[in-house]
Amino acid sequence: MNKTGIIEVPGLDYNLDPLGYGHFLYNHMINHKHKIAQVDARTRKNETYQDLLERCVRTALYLKKIGVQPGDFISLCTYNHLDACVPVISAFFINAIMSAVDPSLSLEDTVHLLQQTKPKVIFALSESIPMIESVINRIGTNTTVIVFDSNASHIPFSSVLAACTKNEISSFSPTPVKSLDDIAIVFFSSGTTGLSKGICHKHYSLFCQSINNAESGFNFDLSFGYYSPYWTVYVTCLCTSIITGTARLIVPKFDKFDPWEPFYHKPNYVILNVFQSLTLCIFPKPEEVDLSFVKVVLITGGVIQSDQIEELQKIFVDSKIYLLYGQSEVFGYLAHFTPKDEKLLASKRNSVGFGRPGISYKIVDLDSRMPLGPNKIGELCVKTKFAMVGYHNMDSSVAWDSNGWLKTGDVVYYDDYGCFYVVERIKEMFKYQGWHVTPSVIETVLLQHPAVASAVVLGAVHKYDGHRPIGIVVLKPGYENVNEAEIQNFVDDKVENRLKLRAGLKFVDRLPMTASGKINRWRLKANLGI
Image 1 (cartoon, one colour):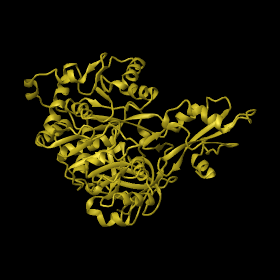
Image 2 (image 1 turned 135 degrees about the vertical axis):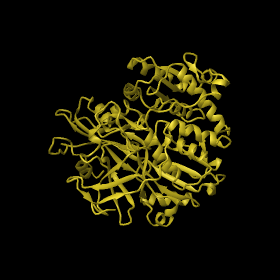
Image 3 (image 1 turned 120 degrees about the vertical axis):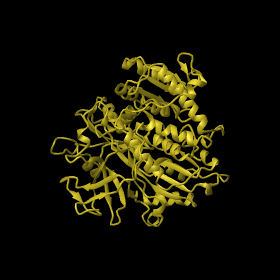
Image 4 (image 1 turned 135 degrees about the horizontal axis):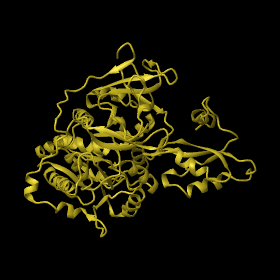
């Protein structure tokens, strides 16, 4: 750290392929062609990188045949299965831009996301087709729909794979990029306004963070994580596995009533979000599950307390548990310990570790914006060449400060060793069971009730769920006889399952306001002890 309060981590020796990230992945898949790439946890079927590469090439050739050009958007709406990663890799091969959504999203959320990208092609499961058809009708695009499983109305994925010859496959090569600054992928995330934004990343960013991951020192044969293709961590782990030639264990989605299912397959490298890891603490481990094979457990996606880590360690007795801190705006991780930090890991259980190569860090005072030293709490800002390019088709200037530092929106501090600790989020959003909750969505529904004058939704801390939504309401005059249960039921009947007011609803006489006329959420939380 220098005297100005800035922590600088030197970059790795990034040897980047000028032909682009797709060409880079293609070569690694060829180099690892005889190694196992994926294992289906349900069917126990496995396949090599050569098997996977052929399907990716066939899909890339098909996309080119139907007119997909570099820079066109492709989308994906699916849970995990052996074919789920194929469109992602194929998009890299032809320099199309992948931007996935998730089957669990509502129609309105999916419309909002796909309205931004207007994909030329979307790959989906048959169960999502009715929603996808409604979305396409709403946004007015001529999107080609390809269905992984059977559906008579659209193109089956099997016909995509059958649409090219062996000669075409043997002569295929990925499309070169014009520049490593070309956009490679767009992830959807949500900001403090509650509106989901498309986070644009260039080929250069994917290269650097992938190399950081591959060089982090974690050695494994079979990795596992409950992550959706909609999440950044999906692409991060997929690409890291391709580069290192390691296998991924595939499970469709997280089952909170049977969370131990994947561990029968003895993965040695496991990635869990906070909710998933705490769910394992609730459900007793089946006696026949042997966890001695699990060497590393990585916890991401939120803040976890020291006592919860200790509870998890009692289950994963033979494992090293690491906390990871990341953001989609930097394509993955911002801080974590590595195996060489084992001694510090044991003494700093609630730290997310050291900064990553190629990133500079500063903690700034929330009011003055001046850099702070060790053990001072403030907002973390970062500067790196592999930060996002910006938000897709949106003004992105608010994401950076006047000196070009990316604002994370997180309250963080670092200690005298340079280890980082995440305290809480400045943002109004919070996570329930690993999913982002946008308060404004629930607030909009609250305000539809005739008795509600004003409303705020906050995240009440919960030991296992991370946060649960709680509604704070000011009633209109003349509605004093309305009770909390009536309004809570009104909301819960209208919103998605993850948005229900599980922490209840409270009436207040007034809401505290800031000098600028905005609701002071932090003071409200303090007043109510939330």
